[in-house]
Length: 432
Image 1 (tube, rainbow, N blue to C red):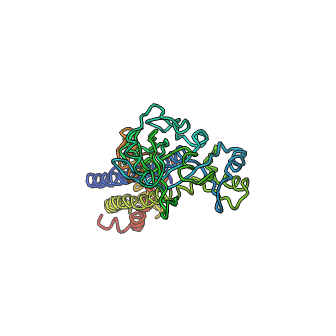
Image 2: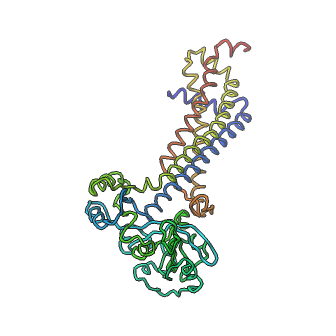
Image 3: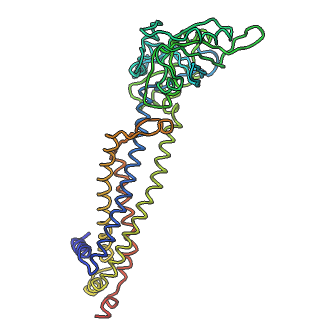
């Protein structure tokens, strides 16, 4: 764009016969556009924060990949552990027994996922031991009271007697929201029942049951885990479920979760393929991550219409500017100015409005995002998985929003600028 076009465009923008009217309309256009830009950036930053927070918690509190045996019992897990740990980049592997169970306390009832783990081995693949906020993680390994006092054992043993079981007690660590549902704390007794395994007593088949003592409470920060997961020792879980030396899968952790697909292939090859299969952390949480990415795309498409609506203010401003400058445009055309020069003048004026709105909106969005991060805005963790609103600003988000807004602003200048370029010398000077 030539210096001449920029000079004339700035003169037209700052000096007009209807200066006050144009200034008001321009201000409304700038404010509307800045509001749209700010809203877009804030919403997308929140969605980026949700995705990043989900991945962070998933990688911190759970494993990176699970190795399953598709056919037969999985009792050769020791060999699979050794084979997996021999792969460069694999930080550890450990067996896990996984079952859905029903938990009952004196004051609550809840379904949950029981994870039978080797307490020492699980430290290599998860930060669970660091997430314990009450009680002691080491109680899973020591199998002793660790300072807490078991409560209400007599009352809770009645369930074992009813189901024909011998009363038994083993330590477990519950998620903070699961403990809240059951209204229990370290030392409380919780009854456990699972229908996945049944025992024959007389002529009846009854579900396997047992009593666990709350040895600790963990908090990962993600409601889906904190409300549904509990952990117990591997041997105790195998005895409770009466599954012998079998496990559900072998969990692993790698040094670079971003390259999990490469590790997935290496692990599959190392364990010999079928009947073994590997499921990585992205597969395990595919639904949640896809939900956030899809919601982010939908939010962008919906909110970009705010910028589209604001662009009508640019069209209005330029149309009024064209009407106001009809005489000046005619003089320029009589002096030999080409149509593309006239178009460039009014397109540049519209671009200025768009640039001002985009800049103000970006600044406003940064301030609001910093405010949200520092204030820790509370949200419903039952709905959004987290108790506070995560925000993550990224250069990519700003670039996409700024580019989209400027593109809409330039597109809004096309009609007024084309109309302006169609003004003839005679049309503007007819009444002079």
